[in-house]
Length: 448
Image (tube, rainbow, N blue to C red; front, side):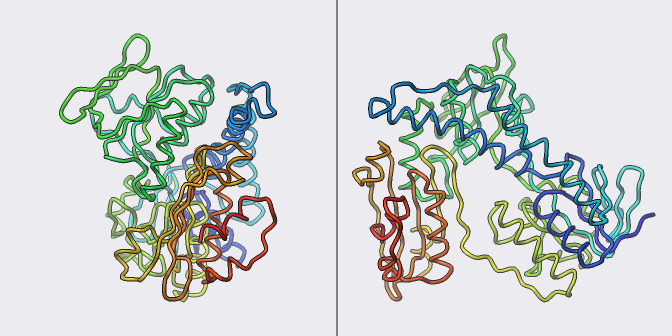
């Protein structure tokens, strides 16, 4: 049996943060991952996705400016962009493992299962640790209808050697929309099937309506209030069956992708043996990110049921909280600042702080500014049709409670709103700032 001060399950950003911080303070640390080291974001999510989007941004910009200075619209070369993407992915696992060796972190490549409150089975190795950190992230939801196993995953999409001529995404969340935009701009016929009345349910509905319009203008077939019930393999691809208001609705496509959600990847860990309480949303933790039922276990990132969003920067922050509490005793409570979240479609949609619904339920006195501003200079110079904002302002102290945006580069603008909310800058503070001009952020004072 091998013994450690700290053993980490999962090599994503939360797990890496804990392992390296604890090792840097002299603790004996081990880490394992059954997949290549780096986690979802670096290998199967945010980073490779953003590299691929880069090519579609060029095409989108050229399409909008055709006849306004651009004559030729480029075509996305799928093979080349995937090869470029792979250069980022391939360099990560060896880089991370080299860092582990440098920091004297023992590295394993196996799934882990609990044997008791502080012991794990890793293949043929038995591990005992004073503290065990669960940072296993999330994985695609199991589709429990007939043929559900035939659907490909987001990982498969990011590794397609050739883009199918027609694709269907099951689910109406950010993964479905981001990949639909990539596929449509790269030449595929795209369908999104969502069971709810509206997609992207966690975002402001008024802003989402602009993204829906832009998505349909792109040629994506958006099918709502439809529950997929069956996937069948047919000669030229797949037949997807669903019910729309009780009526059968069928789609024939070359490839179908499961983008119906990502539950925490914790259900194969034999948590009952360790008396680790959990729900469908993750490991149950207290304000120190320690298991509510087993003090030897901590959890961070998508594997933990916390007040944080399932975002990479949040996982990093939680990793630092866990590290501090392992090293110093439970002295650091998790405290979430405003968490901006982005849907990397084109146009981009971004959100931070309170939604209008949450503001209404808070009891605060507030006002709402909401407008479509495709006639503003920044929209006209880029020839964009969907540029809109909704800001929520506290009437009593003039601070920003929330900001919801759609339009060019709002993934950057939203960070300034996040800073304003965190520092409690007032509307007057923002209006009297001098922003560089003409930039997208120079529109902020007019959104207040």
